Image 1 (tube, rainbow, N blue to C red):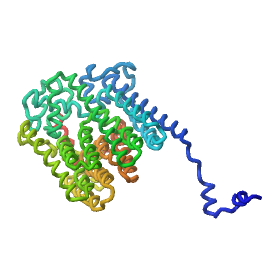
Image 2: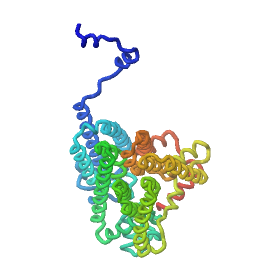
Image 3: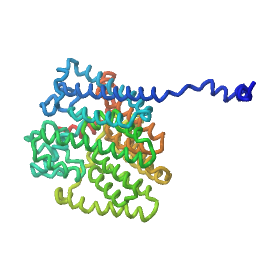
Length: 478
């Protein structure tokens, strides 16, 4: 017997032999590639199916479509599958099952992303964006509110921070708006850049706004790709984690929300910090805050990423220098009025965490004292994350998840605030919790959920806090 054969017959230690018996063969690269391609195909097919259903005719999938559903809203795919023969309940159930089922190919795509050619991933992401561009805005959209505030100011000469849609009920956008007695909660920079849309016809403004939102999403994903490369991460995995998330597709991009513009500037700040262009990073972050105040949460983590006092000072210098013209623009257009952030913070969604906790402990839902406690918890969490001082990108992601948990008004597309940081950070636990938040928000906001709970007489808004929130929301929407 040769020495090689002798080595082959040496007994293994018991634990090693046991592990060897239990080990499973890893999937080959070819098998992973096939799984990845199937997952991309499934997401494309599911997204197209939802878009075709929404485009077919007035339905619960498209806000205000029962009141008005002109061809320029329905889009070029209108009537491609004919009119839907499903009852509203059947449509709600079918779409809900389809959207929830999208989680499976999404998770498979994350697992197999490294086996896919980068070009294939990028083409699939762009194709999804094109499909969604052709769709009418999905459930829970604010698209027409953006156009309404622009027309309120630029066309009718009324300050959107002190006037409401109800004062211009003759405007053609009025029938599509949802918050008719709410002054604008959107940042002054975003409101200012929408003003030119008021000077053109509503259908053209609508399509320009949709196109700009889709481009903003693609810019965000390009920035995520660049960040991943700078950090030594696989950009395909980061891109898939963000872009193929079902909430990103159906509620955020499909609803054409302005969060992408804020996230573009926030992620630009991250790229600039990684490139040690600290003043430019501060300026980008200031502009992000002027789009949506939520971006301010990133500032302490950007400062954490610049450990020297000199670099931190440069970040603050850049933010201050950008704030001066932004403030001047705001005062010139809107005077001393500011976005209405207070009203929405007093409203509740049925499945926001404070409301669920308040309902569970018998406090009547999200009572004011519970909302204040949630704010304190958020502040303490951010402080702890800053003291911990490990990965600042993961810290920003954890802080964003903590913000979502604290919000009284929680809607599904807010999870996109956390997705880029979870994709780029070093924390696998953060990614798991971000996926868990995605599942939670998806299950609580798909169209079938309120139908199912109503059939079983289950509600989380039956207490005093919920009743008060419903009353305020009804007054704002009338």
